[in-house]
Length: 424
Image (tube, rainbow, N blue to C red):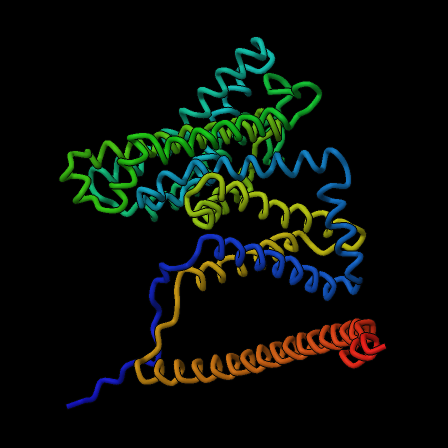
């Protein structure tokens, strides 16, 4: 009979971690990742730390436009992360955010291309919003219908649809473009600046949508239903929730938000379209949603940190020494490596084999005993010092009292002196 050897350790879910401790660890790890980026940059450039910090922070806050652009990029990334979050809470693994936003860009571009300059800009903007939402919603609902009807694998389907979206955008550009540059530029029918600021509109829109999404997920009936469907489809069916309807409804919501993101990218930001208009934000949004634990507030913080690293790295790459186009991606990768690593150690713990755990507990107890004895010795020494100081004070007080008593005794006449005076 073969003997089964128990492994030395295994992983177990760590459910007793204080939330404040989690976020404190995440903050510490972010600082560590930032300094690791600095060390890597010093190694690549041969410059000192002052060079890294100078160009990094100048690229973020060196001008008013740079600062506004930081929050604008954060808003766009956060919006895409918000779009896929209801899907993930429902455990519908939507990896097609990139393609869905790109289809929103295509819908917006179609409206601007055929209406821009021919009708009023207001009419063009309204139609471009409608088409952007329509294109992205259709693209998001297709895998939802397949999932609800035939229980297909939504991960593979949404991933493949990203590439189809790229092909459709390239086909449209080649069909209407007058040059073969692979990019279509628009000058009419686009959103301009508001109050002299081209960024504030997008930031306000995303702030409002973030608030609404937080309310929707936490307090609405639909938010509760998609959570139940994600946790247990059988329980959802038992309580009367129509899972197919919830799947389709959730992907419609995802499509609407992706359409708004596509409209903001084309009409309000780039004023042009190509097959890289989304710029990988759909895939990064998936990470933002997961790392933010599907909480819109935490997702906003995570989006800011990602854009902080990425834009600062871009500025550094263009700061006098060319580090290549891949440098910002390397820095962002370092950031994600540390953040994902700390998520692992926060959410999981090592459970050792019983005999090994007993030895570990014994060593831990001995270490704690040594420290407790050391602490006791320090307390005793401190108490002795305190008692010595108290004794010295008591002795000094006693000496002072005795001196006063002696002086008083010298003033009081003795009995013999009294008798002598009476005899006289």
